Image (cartoon, rainbow, N blue to C red; front, side, top):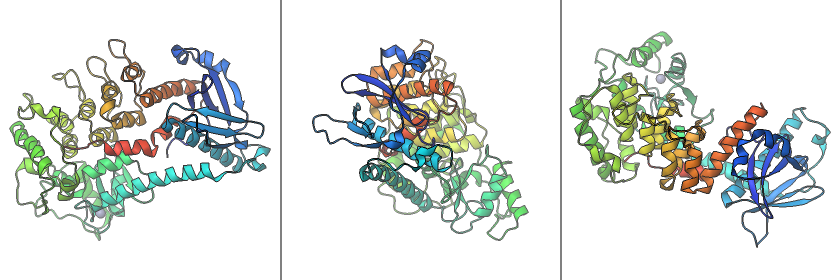
Length: 497
Ligand SMILES: [Zn+2]
């Protein structure tokens, strides 16, 4: 989990006898009377009007309430009192319990480090196993989801060997290239710098589900069909025994000089290649033999090659509305349009190829309302394609010619799945950026009426204010969005069709 807990701040509303805004800060639970919808914009007012409900959370036990009359209620039991608080939904209620537990855990942790006072030695006044069990269960669900996805990535065709030297059982990954590497090639990739290759350990580093979804779309066979397309027979790949210098110069030739890179397909080849995507989408259940041979040297087939396992496991999906213009290749053709088309067709290998060819990840398509590739991935609702661009440093808030950001596009599509919204928020999207009509994503969320989305946007807006008044404020909303409930939502969002 990222963000480091909730020591600094966390807010939400309770709806019980009357509604109030709550905040966890410096080990205390504070509350503020909510005046009206505009009060969130007045940080000076907030600073002055908080009252203390719980002065030291370390002395409290948090647990779900057994109150049968009211839903979404949890209980805070302190030595002197007991408080029942009601959230707007079960998800919010769970998040509150989770967040308070985390805050308490972190308070005790910092006490253990000698950063706090004599309270450290006091036992909890009321012991109850349930909240801890609750928290542990959530952590376990998350860890299992990540573990399953890592195993899936390992099982992709070509991933049983290092992408660059064919050494067995690679344990490292380049997350922006979507490949697995042995320890030696991983070391050489680190030398390329993070703008070219972001290296992680499969078992020692912390993984995001979104990152693994991108890795699932690529894999060594797919990426080598792009980066080693023009590898001549007299140029030998390194092997597990190759010395460091030779290995490094091969890797630099491959990823920096791009000496073996497949060239940009002609625009008329796009017609057949985008048709190929459609055909694959209905062939998935019937393909039974590997499709990774090199006998066909046609550019298009290599560019869009996807390995057998991916074909078998991807969901059978009808072509979306975005595909209606598939058979009309773009009038203007270059690598930026190639990237844009890849985003439109949720085709991560095609996008990887375009970036390798030098496409601008923040390309402003003046022939299509100034939309960016990232906006296209949101319109096609592909977590994999969007995260691929973000991992490769696309700007998350870059707007179109009307000032509309990716979050402006994602918000009205919330009813089709909130995965793209969650992803954008986790990657730093700002819900308060206004378009040229003065509308921000926060106000758009009111019109769609999804209480979770409204809460996230408000939370982030408030977090921004808290950050200004409290330098220690951490990105608490990120830990909320890492909840297994939302991870499953991300996993459900289609990546390819
Ligand atoms: Zn290697």
